[in-house]
Length: 145
Image 1 (cartoon, rainbow, N blue to C red):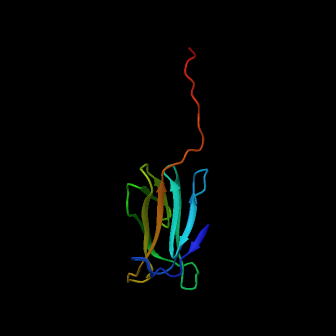
Image 2: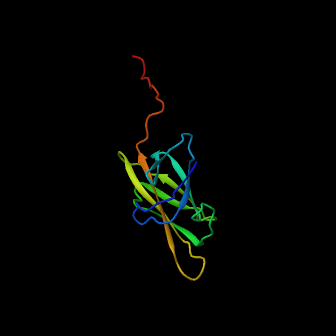
Image 3: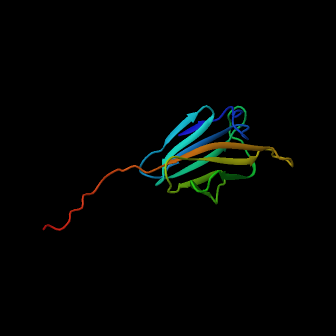
């Protein structure tokens, strides 16, 4: 599923437009929510999620960028970040174990100026990691007496 930002003005440091695609690599699909102009994915501490930022023009057409995308996470104790070595527009986030609900902002920055100048576009999303819930159970019996 992909969603498109068209107005990121209410986000700190978010300017321009970007389209994000999130997908879960586990058997259970994560929930993708659009809150205002902020994209968020909820996942358990046992899941991995991939993301891709797709720069677009003002009319929503794919746009070329100058150089690589630089990804960051606000809290590396919530998720680890692995940028795709062959395509910096793609990244993978692995949830880390913890307690309770743990939000982590994700940023993807790139240079939109195709000339000698620099015009940085920053796209922001959020990953919310929650404790894994029970999915099944086992009963273990002791020795009969």
